[in-house]
Amino acid sequence: MELDRDPVLHALRRMSVMASERYSGVRIRLQPGKMVLNAINPDVGEANDEVEIQYQEGDLEVGFNVRYLLEAIEAVDEEKFTLEIRSGLRPAIVKPAQDSGYLCIVMPLKI
Image (tube, rainbow, N blue to C red; front, side):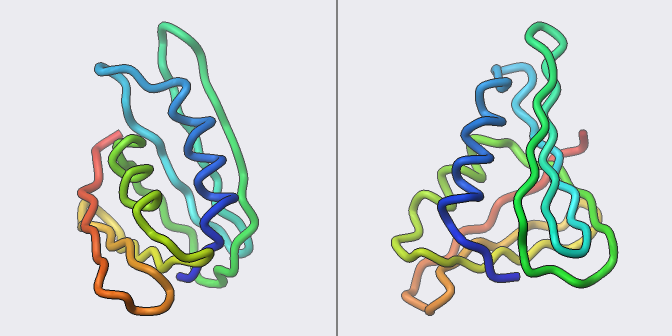
């Protein structure tokens, strides 16, 4: 799916506030028209955020280390990027919407 870089980055940065070495995961749930992000840290609390996206397929849920995903998206120099997520524990691919030779693979987490 193709996403706007800034809204996703802002949401992930808000989720990263909850991250620690022990609890660094963010759960991403894709639903038609939106991406729902959730991070839980028993020491600090819970954070939820929602970003409107162009997604029309079935529900999909996957977890990532929020810092790794942030770094992959921050390296994209364009306003739009492509995020390829598959179900289960398969890696996600982050790349610019216009192919510029950059490609980052981010491994998912069990959350």
